[in-house]
Length: 218
Image (tube, rainbow, N blue to C red):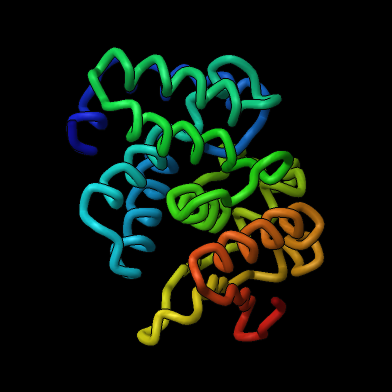
């Protein structure tokens, strides 16, 4: 089964929709189709660029698309509950055990609280997920009531995650409007995520760099 077939599966789309509705009720930024599709495509780009085989790239995209369905259960430990949900879905769809193992391991390890980049698919998922910072993820339309997560995401005017031609470096480059959110705001909520990104990059044989407004910070 392919990534495109997973994307068109109505049951999966329902789970993603309801998971995002739960996060919306809790005041979180967007975790719906825009986010999971971006994560899927970016994770696939990382492993494809590094020369991984086509099926591994496909499994990485599937992991990216499914990675946040655990929010349907609860935000707390959503990576683990999402892995269990993904196991059941993929098993029912007839995926072989080896592929289910790769996908569920990646999903279960994508959160910075408990996650570890135990393999290339997990590492690519971490990098793709933690780099998705953008204005369009903010749901709150009243800037005066922004919390720190709203400010940080809304302040990002441009975000780019790229691997260099030599395949030695992966760089997250952000353009930030510091009138809305400061660099310190970013580090207050994203430092643990950036440390996990560094570990994920190392798992893939890469060095991780973070640049904000043309200044290298990591």
